[in-house]
Length: 586
Image (tube, rainbow, N blue to C red; front, side, top):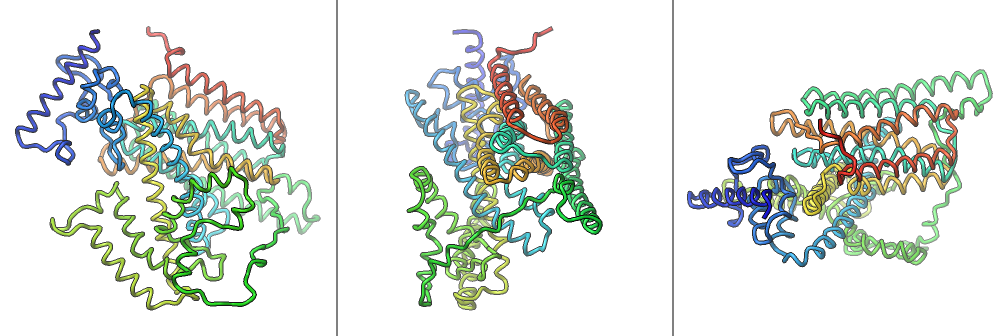
């Protein structure tokens, strides 16, 4: 037995003795169903009288098989602050060691399915309700695009960052994901757009967005160097985003004012104006094929038929015309879509009835508040008993049932009520908490995989978490480019990641400071974080210099150079993680 293993066994023995003392003195531990508070904090378990090594949770794989479960349950560094499943206990306590590959495989599939849940919730429920709120508030397209709609598109990234920053042990996961997504989007996605459809970028929006993003990266780089984020620093992130929104609004107003003046003295649609236009032409060759499927004779649907049709996530006409790949993916989405249809109301101002479904919306008044109570803080508030007798979730069900009954008898199936717009806010909150719950599970799974494979949170963030959260945006941008809107897709690359880093870091740290009443400590995972931050900064500088030199004409050569840059960065990051590239100790 090596000296390191002896040290680990001594510390494990100390943990077991402390746990026995707490049990004898009446403290209830994890085996009795409640959360045991250990006399150690995550920062205290650094040195003991018998060991001079830092006991992290990933050291569990160096112990004997019989000791791993007790180590996972007693080490504070192995506890998850949120979530519904304890993935580390599932691996080391409930499954035999020979089934570890099976557990990892199941976790990998569950991780992919969670990314699918994030994408479906954001695309079909979160973003439509945000769009309806923007319409109700009568916001302009530019203001809505850089605020509500950008928040909807970046919801998985932002919520993952908020969850990761809530625990100091996973702050590196948030930084790795935000930086990793930034490198991925500004190289792979932007390069792919240039390869699919070479185009001329809008000069002013491009320079504006890339300068703001470079400032945001510099702020994060400085915070990493200082090792902390204070309240003023977190508010500075949010203030910079507000300034960015104001800059977009003012620039758009100045552009329109300049264009109106030029139209007075020159012919409309001159090449000079079109070269810097921020507005993409929208094709008018659209036809509403749904008119062909309307019945010739009008008939009144019953309440049961309305409910059944509203809860059906499958369009049979579309099913017959789609490929096998689309059908297979749709089968995986069906349970998620059905559950979300049952729990999340969606308001559509473009429809005559606003997507009013009386029986389903009345069910939403009961189910949606119940979901809010059971997903907020992983259900901690929902199961709280008022006066030690009545749980909060029961009160929510009773009140929701009363509201649903009043709404059902006071409204009709054909005409939405005047207060129907309130369902957009209810759907926004419910879908946001669904995304937050899925993001919490994603962070916990990635942290568990990091413990098993002894990987840092940063490398998990810049690879799996960044890829999973950015894959939907990448496909959307590529589709826009193929359809003839590469400028719009290219602008979305930089506009979305500005929101992600400023709101993700700023709001995440602000919430953590408000909970702990102390500044957020940032402990970079060695050299890898600096490699990541340096690669992101270098990619932005290269684009800032090379794009104007090309007169903002982005071709396939530029796209392939960006792809080569990302591959090189990924190789260097992995070599740094596994110790091939390291700093020499002086």
